[in-house]
Length: 578
Image (cartoon, rainbow, N blue to C red; front, side):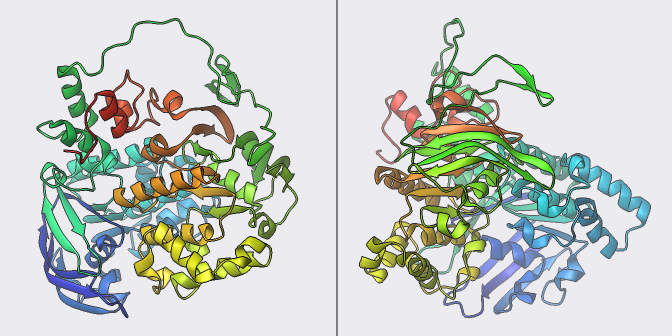
């Protein structure tokens, strides 16, 4: 189906090739998972399959790529549109019309599909991805995760022979991600559709893959590429999910790729004994709020959280905040507080109001009621630029913060805006502050790069650097691990720990359960714009059916969430110690 023959490619003005002498064959009906560090060439490889490289990006291209008999040097992306369906890392990049249903129809119309066939296909993908309730919604009103599902549906509707997806679950909550990946696996198995998928969160998808294609790039050298079965490739790779890391540390063979496989080892060795029955007791969150018995609310049943009074010494306090957008209540009477040196994680399914809550705190969307304070000072009526002097905000799409010519210029511009209002910043050496911040995020080698030419993961880190260089007291981070591989995510967790130790208050919106398990002090779960429950990660994630880490699912009756928790509990040496 797809043949790469000694393919090399260098982007315009780049100093090293993104691909070098790559030869491989992807068979028809194969599910190929592409993994590797941020910036190692994964997205470039995917773009070669539909001809975006070299036709759209230019640069120097050598070798040959054949897809279903087409030579991509002669066949441009439009010639391959009915053969290769492409879902971009950033769903906003492929939205062209205003209404969801029209977006699904747009590609079909361009292919000249008959109206009756068009309608059937639209209904099928609406059901497959469970987005029928979005069909009349305007694209601009969708959450990031909802847009991602619409983008996947618009490509599936064209029924391509090859489906290429660049991190399709990066903005999806765990349940929705599982549904999307299950749908892809079913299409692959039932219809023989060839799937080439790039993903950083291997715990979600590795069990579906026939083979892993691993990109590795060291320093300024061209990337090296290896390919094999998931167990072969993960036996030694540093880019391994928590279950695999634990299995390697404990010497489990064959290496487990799923919780089902891991549980066999747990049961065989008696590592997770059943707890003794106990009488249920009322629970309280850290702020002293009681979780009351189930009661109906807005058509659903769940435990309601009685809003606690904001802490008087909180770094950030939100009290009874409500937001309406397009006539819809998106945030409803939310009360939250984050203390100095504390990391509060906000979780919930797509469309639950998490991003809107952060945007309201920054003044990017107006609140209809409520109060917001930073270190006891009200910022409720302040414009966004004044709030930004105290609060650093990294949005879901990092490109919203990137508009300078180089990475260094991005950080220097931020410093210039803050120095006029912060004497402490004005007294420091700008070059030293920039260099120190870049080093924190391992970005020194990109100091002269154009931000818009970087990979998604690199852009994410640069956006965070542009905020951290001004040393804000409060940080709001929206999906900060989007586009980050395991190595860079581990570095981010270390950075978050250092920021907390330095007294920064961090509020983090994420679908990344592993990140929350490793770094959060408290978790607040949102649903339909309300805070459903608050508590420690151990109290909320350990027995959750959806928002649980791999280790939490593996050890159902232990209060362990991370590999380190499990190894310590089992009295095993940490990874790498042996």
